[in-house]
Image (cartoon, rainbow, N blue to C red; front, side, top):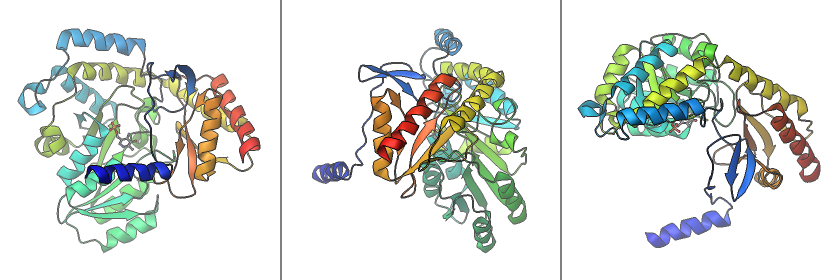
Length: 386
Ligand SMILES: *Cc1c(COP(=O)(O)O)cnc(C)c1O
């Protein structure tokens, strides 16, 4: 086995697909330290600039003093601290759902929820561009797994019509992580009603950014129904770590009993929940942060003057710049890095062939000047490289 592993790694290196972890020597922020150098970063999902917020740091320190560093046991034994419970109640109220359940990560939430709600004889319908952990949750559930072309409502309806599955769940990212566009969730919900299906929405990139006071994509689209179960991560706009699932009380009660990644896992430390409660308050009061984000999106659009590359349509903090060839995307990313700016190049298989791109993620912590500088360098790079 060891020889086979080495051979696979060598092949990746030959194909230019070997990935390296960048070593970070600073907090996650607009300016980060790595390679003994400072860089302006457009890489993180810290869309509201909360990951290094002084109030959250202080809250974590104080809560650690009161609650210790470890949860010590699973939630169903003695690990369910009052801080965990308060956060769940606060999140349910914030997203205007009957109940919520906190998981340690979004990956665990998706595996846990799909594994608990679907099984043999059921069917999951998934957008082809869904995040990897929705796919893994579907495989793990042992339900039939049907994938449809990105945002294709007609294709989805055909699949639903043909299905005899006992229970049907449509699973979709609300905001697609590498495209920044939204799923047609209103159309999906109408199909759920027509075909007696349920809608599982992963709002990792909409929570905190879209909707009134950052309540997320469902609020943005004014959707509400007992057929909806939502999930959002708390390590992106919320700036900390973890995830939650929200829905009808009976769904949450059922997940507490049956979602294995919840039942058989030690919860994140209670102090983290206390910090998240403070973060949700900052999100709720953070209309100024979202205004700043929207301003930065406009600034980027206004200052990019491109003929070959193009910014993909997106009203979220994820602003992908479509370049096309893997080679050009990599060259552009390297060009920017030489000038002190980090933006990741995203290549297949993460995105479809010939759609390599730069994934520019904006944060309320960026200034207009930061974004203008980025746009100026991309314009120059196109003239020099494309
Ligand atoms: C990041 C992400 C996840 C995973 O969340 P983690 O908390 O990072 O494990 C799930 N779904 C989507 C769409 C994501 O972007």
